[in-house]
Image (cartoon, rainbow, N blue to C red):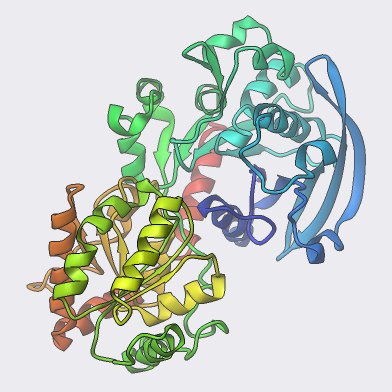
Length: 474
């Protein structure tokens, strides 16, 4: 089985969110299961020089964009045994950042077409093109519209993975003909209130669709989570699967992580040494008995921050806890948490920045990890927290619902604490319940043992993807 992953980002080359973690880790798990898997990315200016210097030039080709032909270079390196191809065009990708430009529709139309154009040149004929999110979503439609007549492409199948349905890539109608080179017979497959919707193209034209958790695959078929595409997703329900993400358990391993203060496996005393060190580093009172609640997150509404800002003052004023926040995002939230730290300097540390090393220290140091998300297709934070023995407190949505199971004091089962309704006081009650169990060592040992015992690797999920690859050829 030969598979080519097409995506806009991948760790460690370029990353803005969880998509990069998936593209960085899943191919390695598939390779371990015997799949010949490769990855193709845009070559952004921000890719670190240590990787750029390793790239070998493979080919030059012209990529048709509507009535024009644009330069495209293909470069290649092998990382962790996975061949990675880079689509080079200085005009489209030689910019700061990777998204948010007025011509994103054109930039990613070029990338999608380049992926298909380069296959014969790089001498790789995949059985499956696995496309990820809207940035690679028109590949299946372009394959149908421009390449099926060519014997090289005739048997290629497509899988499309929705990582976050909120971001769909909606552009003016003219994109269909002027950039994608397709006539109006394809408009119905991409039409969205008179515009062209790249995400919709992926859903309509792919042989199979996946999302990043079973619960999210059901949620996006409802009007609340479907963002206008729920009817379409229901019509393709038989070709829609939810497969929960994993994490790279070799990179994220408290027993060998060089970034944390004290390495440990499941020893809570060793884990507690990390809390004392982080308290000292952040200027919080050094106190092993005080429960530390943490968030590592983008500071945006969807992460449930409106719930937190409503009740955090009450929690910090009345409860004997410490709260550590790491993240950047909306200015209103950045300002709110900076001001909250000024109000509670001995209980709250607001780190308004992105720092991977500090995030790992927080996972290792914290006792509880908060994710009260409005929606969460899968979530990586709760998996990392579980891996490091920080017990998640989450809302029952998307992948949080599939990976965090409420602790039951009667049976000793469960690896976290959960609440269902998007309600600030339900969240606060659940945090206080979690803290009450932290103060009961016999229960805390059980819930942390359950967390450490979980398998958060990609192994099971990789096999589920392989099953889908095989199924679409039946």
